[in-house]
Image (tube, one colour):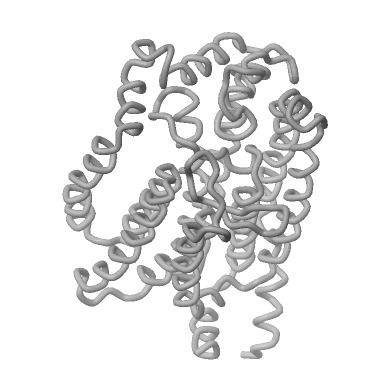
Length: 383
């Protein structure tokens, strides 16, 4: 077989158009809602109602370019660099705690300074972890206990480092995606059950020994009992949903974002969407994220190697699980925690990492037509 024609055939495939259009739709909604949710606050705080919108547009332009770049990089190349990714993850997550390098905002040390901007390393660590786990669990299993031991230790270290920031939402996102990858890889279900059981005491300690987390759980169970304290914000989110009704009050006409919802352009932007676009708008957002998961599964099903299959599942779940956590908080399904809504919330780190993930997914989708025999040949040449 002519290797050159084989490579050309693989590269000539078109990426998943449906996923691309869904991502662009989410980005368009994000830009519109970012301005609507932040304009009044930006004018009051910075004297410029377009302050957050202009910055978000810059992040969008950078993210879009990154998505196009990663769309062209063969996803199999990442297999060679997982050790570097893990080392970089530990270094970045350590730097956030060093004074003068890490930036602490509202008591959380989650950011690193980059000139006038700050970025959140944990958003990119999520991608590194998905790539690493996809590589580990795509290989042929010998001793299951040995194969799972090192990944569990690594995920636990990353989880605890993110928890120390503290960033409970992102830590849970990484943990949930790791379990899904383990499940999809065909690992014995008994091992997964065992990991779940031994993790229960850890979660109990992480929640009930930290006072503000314990209060959030109590407020989640009965927010009206804490209506003047920690339950105030979730009640205001409920009011936003009630005001929005079926059709919403109109884009830009919401009032809950003015002083009642915390971080309306980031953590609680879904409540702003609910008030201004109503049930129709929120259902449309939910359908878009379901479409992301659907296309991720389709891409994974069409992938011709286990690494591509697990990588596609992991990256699509990385986006969807984060969206579920954000929406779950805004709707009262989950205790309050700060985590952005993918592609929609204001924030450069989240936007860039999710668009990189989208680019990798689009690249995997380009190779869906390669037959297994040709892939075997490619693996021999690769090695």
